[in-house]
Length: 265
Ligand code: NAD
Image (tube, rainbow, N blue to C red; front, side):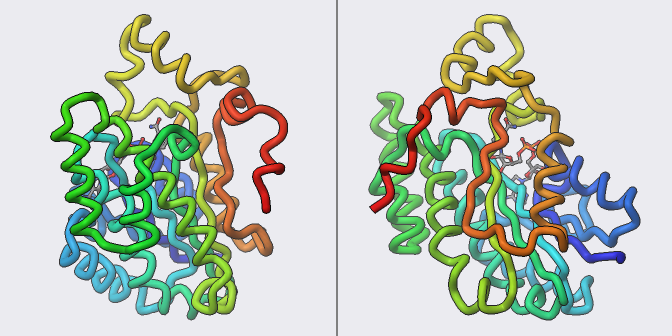
């Protein structure tokens, strides 16, 4: 059956690969990006998110079968908070009603291995507990201003906040109650423009491989992530929800070890 998919970050990398595969399979894809997309919008601003959601709803005739939210930045700057967390959460919330009109609605977002790495608790909570963009942006800017490397915590903090938001929201009336599985995927290193510089030289690769060791098949191609996103967004995914599924060549298992369940209450 032909489905309508909305893909943010569709102009490059993981989002572009996902869009291409789904189009080849005959589905209707509405891409959302800063350029080269059906909906050109800036998810880094409140107005941009609202405009993007309205244009998406119009193009889908108010019925969306799945959303795959890939748009993101890895800059150690405050704008990363606005795009990665608020750009994702506010856009998903704004199109939730159109998803609920599908007979098999699904939502997936892209987190990262960085979600299990060191983060700034104040920044994480300004996002996923306080839902306060101004406070979160100010905290991220304060980390930048420290000029001691703390700005490197910003990206991981946005991804930790996404994982927490997904777990909290997935069981609520507008997601589980509306029959919408809501998940995230957490990739290791994927060969996209986002990380091109980080893996360009042997020295750079050595540094990143220490942070994200990938014993199984090493770096990912964008389509490797696309296939998992597509399954989570398909009718076949009936009961998986609230999860961040790491697609990481084993780095979560290397870094966190075998027993993560004792963390549970
Ligand atoms: P990419 O840079 O190739 O693609 C990101 C896309 O997001 C671009 O098309 C860009 O224009 C779009 N985007 C950025 N800011 C935007 C904004 N304000 N409004 C609308 N669109 C915007 O990167 P990618 O690697 O494909 O990244 C996709 C997702 O995967 C991101 O969320 C990223 O954090 C995550 N991720 C990537 C890796 C990796 O190694 N590449 C690893 C883990 C997670």
